[in-house]
Length: 166
Image (tube, rainbow, N blue to C red):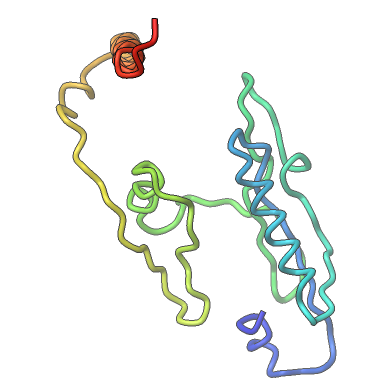
């Protein structure tokens, strides 16, 4: 909140308004958790915060072929007219592949933007090269799925042998 209030020159008039837009009914419920964290944090603030727009999780969800997607990915504000409108993005931000690598490597989702320093910071994560990636990139989906199922089955058998289960 301090970084937001720093833009107001410590004016005592006016009010803090919040517009929350984004997120959807994702399978891992990350949007729901983030929405809860944000609303809880706003509730803990001493400042009087006015929730003006709430278009998140189930309120911002569309289903297509049994997959969930957000209806609106974000909003933009015309600061001269205060008009709020649906934002469109050509890119998903800087270093999309690098930011995704952390999650794909099993790391948790983290905040990568520091509002105080106005810097994008991606912390360390461990990653091991995918063996024989050039081979797998040439395979069709059926071949990959069959191999994946075989590996899962073999892992299951190995686990049963370790546990000495029938």
